[in-house]
Image (tube, rainbow, N blue to C red):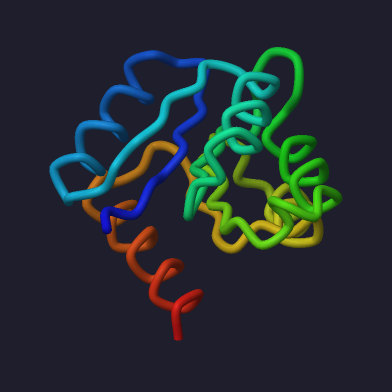
Length: 125
């Protein structure tokens, strides 16, 4: 069965690029354009992994992770933060709230797919 990934980014161009690369790699993809929609989609579809932008309208990616980790049904969903926030404190915050990986923009779409594969492989091991 195809693994499902939720991609949430308020920048349509980035979201479409990530969706394209993930679909090209054989994943099923759900899209969200802000944090609230991402949280709702994650609870509804329970994806294998979420790729979340940190800075989104409404709920940030960090806030989405906090909510997912509190939700018994979604607490174990894997999360990669994809963000322009590259300061050490930002990275620490991302991991401290439960991110499984942290990718800084600008990013290589090929590297992002590799990181998705690595996080999913760790979760199934």
